[in-house]
Length: 315
Image 1 (cartoon, one colour):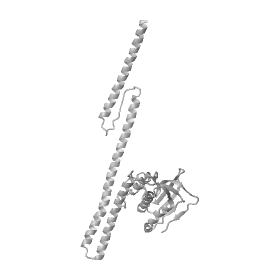
Image 2 (tube, helix red, strand yellow; image 1 turned 60 degrees about the vertical axis):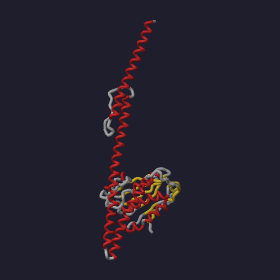
Image 3 (cartoon, helix red, strand yellow; image 1 turned 90 degrees about the horizontal axis):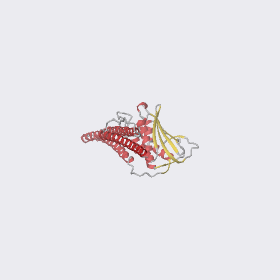
């Protein structure tokens, strides 16, 4: 009896010592990993390593390394975005200073000009430069408002076709200057939107087509893949489709023309994207041959597409 008790006692003691050893191994390994993480430079690519085969340790190391990799990717993306933002601000600052400097020059000439007719020409030129600068500042303010989550939007039923017609007709003189006739294909759709915000989105897409396109704009609305969605496509030819990075088109300050020779701040499409997201809409871009197609997907409340006809708009 005593021998059996002694055997049981020795087995229990052995199991206990084994458990203590395993716990000590866990404590040692986890302590090593904790010291590594505490001393690790946040900008380092160093990862946890382990030679242990203790249950759970390898899985823990893999999970921590996955989090480190994700954190590093976020840091790199944040640095890229900050650099892009800084360069965009610098470019925008240049775009604002250029017309301001020009306006000052024309005002100086006007002050020194004795000929009234010539003075009027110089004052008109100064006014045009100031108007250009004002437009850039308005776009910057519009982006700040569009990106502000605290500014409420009033979603309601909006008749899509009249809104599209109103925006297109508002720019008809500019289309005439280009020698273009915009085309609209849209049924009697009613969509869920903030009317003012949706009009601003369409406005910015039309202005983008006028500034950067080289041919007539075609606006086409048709049912999207989902039952309650409607896709509104804005398509027009562009001079250099290879210069367009469709994935970056809605980034703030992005311009396909690296020289920034065209008008605009590079904020118009970013404003449109922010306003679309705030209303549960999406904006996407693609290049098909020599045509840029921007698709606005909206939620439709009712729609009749029995006979949507293409219409060339005229003032």
